Amino acid sequence: MDGNEIQGAPGLSTPASRLVPEPAAPVAAPRNVAQSSPEATAPIHRRRTARPKSRPVPLLERVLERLIHILAYTAVAAMILIFVFVAKEALPLLTSPEIHEEVTLAKMWFIQHWPGYDAPEHVWQPVSEIPKYGVWPLLVGTLKVTIIAMLVAVPLSVAAAVFVSQYAGQRTREIVKPAIEFLAGIPSVVLGFFALIVMASWFQEVFGFDSRLNAVVAGVALSFAVIPIVFTVCEEALGAVPPSYVEASVALGAARWQTITKVVLPAAAPGIAASVALGLGRAFGETMIVLMASGNAAILSANPAESVRTLSATIAAELAEVVFGGPHYTVLFALAVLLFLITFGINFAGDYTIMRMKRRMGVAA
Image (cartoon, rainbow, N blue to C red; front, side):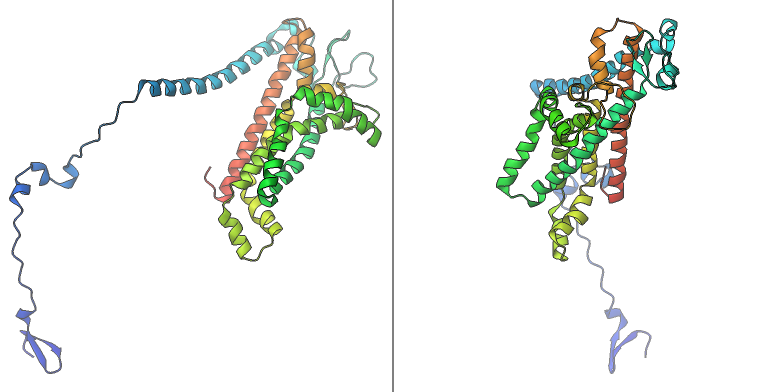
């Protein structure tokens, strides 16, 4: 076969020169485009695009935006100023020699052997002949009431949220949900009065408590203030679960209860954890209910059937009767700082737990 020919098929040969296409004739650019503007022939990265002119923002809109910013920063500033004021009033507990003659941090936190007592004890008696400022009876009482309130409120709230979001029909949901959320509108003093008059007598008859007012009565009454908070956040978290999750589980043959326990509840776990953290902070700082239903006896005991005294109730009951700037006054503000730090720690721990759960589930924080 000749070098100038290509074998295409048996018995067929084609000259190689015919296979090379002839170069196309150059197309001249339109005169009106090539000569209209030098930017048309410039490189793409050097061309400038005209920016659309932004409309002027109305004066009212700018004023409202500025007002919103001011209100947001005011809320943060108010919280900081409150903490600074409380900390300033509690600072003499660390710096004042006159305060140290009556009370110190060691006397507040470490066990002391007081005159008239057979053994060292933690005692809270700030108005006795020898003032005693033991913090542990107040802290333990606060923990007992809070734990009882959460043990009652969390299961009821989560169960009610599951029922409303997963089982109840439209008409039932419109009745049950507002009824539970209505508890948030009941004043704390009304709940405390109900616990003092009705619940205390009923619990004593049923369970045979020696103390009519105790941690159980205060904790159950406090749960009525926590239930609407936990329920509302839980119900929103369960309702935010994508329907595709439920549909996929049902399509795989899972029963309704299996879908809820294995799919819906794990998907809504960050929201449920947030509701528990909010409810815990609400229970720990409640004042009026525990002031009226706990018995206000600073007893260091793990028995929930005994009367208790909480940090918040102590501040509310004693602050109006102390000498301004005295040791008792300073100690009460120190208790307020302690209460603030514990509440802040609860919220921080709740946020950290929620972030970890979201990262574990692959949800953007």
